[in-house]
Image (cartoon, rainbow, N blue to C red; front, side):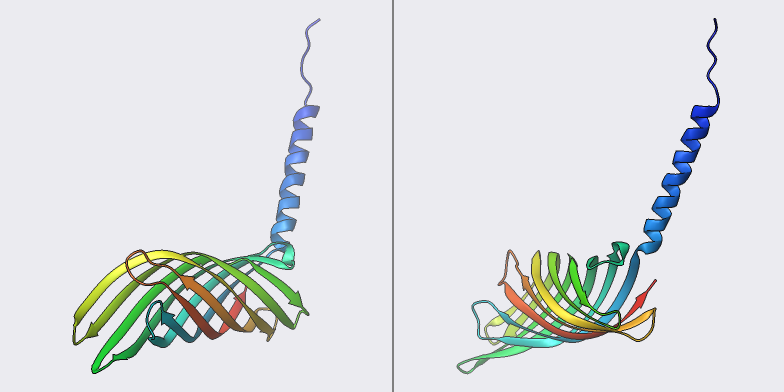
Length: 194
């Protein structure tokens, strides 16, 4: 007797495939994505000197919040411009530092729908340029290295799609060729959910 396959297994595969797509679509609809544009006041101290630098910072943060829960995953890209002077006896040394930090920013959220607090981590890489000028000569160099730290802040929902954010962040920037340092930033931003 010749055995011929029936069409039932094919129909079952189609039903399982459709069900899997529906479940994945439901999960995708439950997630929340957002982009936050922020700017703020950074200040830092270069290692092995008494120089205190300050300036400005702009930042873009993309976040993915699976199932709209308490944990979010973010990717942060920004620019920091710092400058400052140090007096050594009769000599004055001027520093200008430009940094591009790029890092992964996991976040834990808590609070109500209207006002949420958060704490976050930061781990990634940074690209920096240092320009030092003084009576002893000038030095201009570029470097890159580790960027890591954390922060805390609040977000306030204006409506379902727009929110305001305030944050304080502490970030360690290490370099191979010139001094490392802590970068502190107080920032305000506006965010958009989609």
